[in-house]
Every structure is written in structure tokens, then in C-alpha cells.
Image (cartoon, rainbow, N blue to C red; front, side):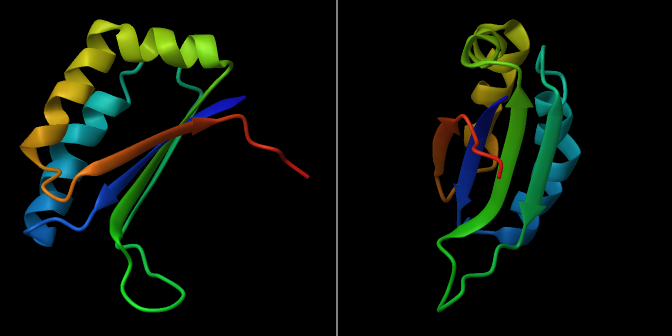
Length: 101
């Protein structure tokens, strides 16, 4: 399994972020070819102080190659092009092979 993780920074308008993210962006992300599972969370809390992030998105693929192909696909391009429409707090994109114990 290989995971794509997107961390969304605090937006200028949290409610507008949530509405757009759930109504417009997540449906695009669900169309990524080869995706095995998707998880997302909005309203992230930090253990101490304010969280620098408002949302986390994760998508699982069979391999790094499958993730790369999904991001290079028309669906992946559409999802990536949509990010500036709502992510006013910026994004950090990570990818990794999780260790499950």
C-alpha cells in the first residue's frame, strides 16, 4: 500500500473551505483512478495550542507507481487544478508507504 496525504493549512474562511471541500473537491478526489481507500478529516485539533492545519486527506494506492499514474491522469489534473479554488491556507503534500504493526 502507498498513501498520498494532503495537509490543508488554516484558510481565511473556514466555513467556505469546508463547504467547497466537501461539495466540490472531495467528489473530484474520489474519481482518482486506482484509489483503494480515501479518508478525510476537517477541523484538526493540536495536542498543544492551535493546529496549523484545518483538514487532512489521505488516499491509498497499491503502489507509488499507481499513485503517480493517478496524479498524472486527467482526474488527478482536475483535482490538483481545483486546490487554489478553496485552499487559501496552502497545502503540504506528502506520500509514503505506511508501516503497519
